[in-house]
View 1 (spheres, rainbow, N blue to C red):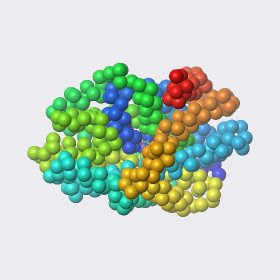
View 2 (tube, rainbow, N blue to C red; view 1 turned 120 degrees about the vertical axis):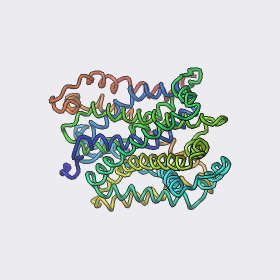
View 3 (spheres, rainbow, N blue to C red; view 1 turned 180 degrees about the vertical axis):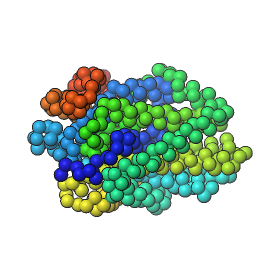
View 4 (spheres, rainbow, N blue to C red; view 1 turned 30 degrees about the vertical axis):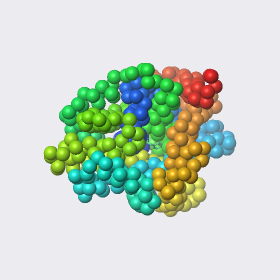
Length: 457
Ligand code: PHE
């Protein structure tokens, strides 16, 4: 079943944009500012960028190597890379299960963004008071029906694109949405930097205060780096199954990580100057920053020029929707590809089945903001539980296991051949990469966990 041509990204640019599309998402525009805001600003960013370089990029390259070497689907990829041993096939099921978990809660927030884009489009923000923004968001997110409806819409759009296939759906979607996303970001950064007190926002973003760094800040920075790059779950392994053999995996990994980091920083440049432009607002508003604080800011700062407030809000929420979509596509693909290839379901059928399961699980997550607020497991509602499982457990542990697998189990010749495209390209960073995946990354992840579990007293 080696991919027929239809199952390969047609161009190198398409492959980079698809992987960047998976990486750039709500993690950059919603989760990143939230985490920066609640973890003290610039010091958190520095630690996050360090994790990106030392752990994120090498694990991304690891996923690329496993996926492309396997060629067909992730479970086969692990088996093939593990020298044909069937036991490794099971490791390939991690992405399949994770796809369900992550899409189910991600789609809830993606649905909120779609609703906010709709509200922005119909001019629903104009003339609202700050209290109304808060009350409306709380009322909307805790409602049992409305958010589920918008989530279902996002899942349906995702399903439609995945059903169209690798080239006509995923690649074409990324080629259209990613450039638009960059344009939107640049327009918004330009506007935001001209706001009064923008310098306070810049200071918060770029002037580190290391007294704020605690072990939980470090764990959050690592979780954010993994989440933002989409690494650890095997998502990029799935995409790499569709990579052409002439792609330079190391170079692509660096390009995708650079795009992702830039978008996260630019989102900070849009959001924090805006927050500081109104005295009294705080950057640590948490997850509601983007849904309460910002629309309120847009109305207040551009209040005298209503069309600008309208346009700024609309572009901002459209940006969020597109960022969310290119990522949710990669999540659905993780599970749907397995159903398609291993359970003999057609691609559209596989996409629909996975979507329906995610819709049910997603409804549980959505309800945890309202009617099911008190339904908890380990003291967490469904939404928080899924986020904890994915971002704080599966991603780092999955990343560590993949490094150990490629660094210690897989024949070095196979790895070297994959990263140098069978010796046809030079890969000067290969020795550093191999050192990281054999020693540094597993040790680093282990130490952070051990510290978090209190093993060091
Ligand atoms: N990286 C995506 C984001 O920033 C989230 C994601 C995680 C996507 C894991 C796929 C797999 O929003």
